[in-house]
Length: 163
Image (cartoon, rainbow, N blue to C red):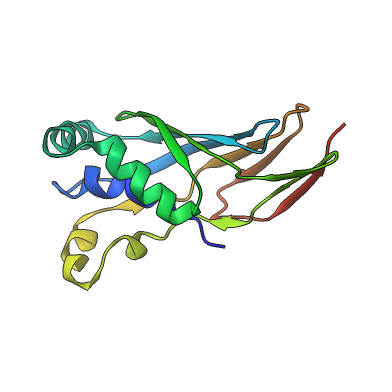
């Protein structure tokens, strides 16, 4: 399964201008007792990207757009809790499956920049320098166990036995 959840959060924020670079520093996924996941992404932005974020908030309801796109990607109910120039946090309901003392998370891939744009918007991609591979991805479980991935463009399915 390919979860391209970065698309809805950054596509509209970055379209209005050309940026020097964009990089995701941390993706922190915390699995709750019911299988819901709170996902927080911290990213590095420059002053141009902060301006683009402000402009995007003027022309659209960024949270509503993100919610709609994320629900299409995950095929699950999503609640967008925060979107700012430095961080995005949202909850994906029923992200992981819990059976007895075992939690299973889905495998997913972080989106490639070229997948953001249809053929009519290729000029936008060519003007941007995007790196959607997080430097660090943490998968946190309710028993305190954490799986950490560095510079990984995909996260494997994880089956974790609770302690």
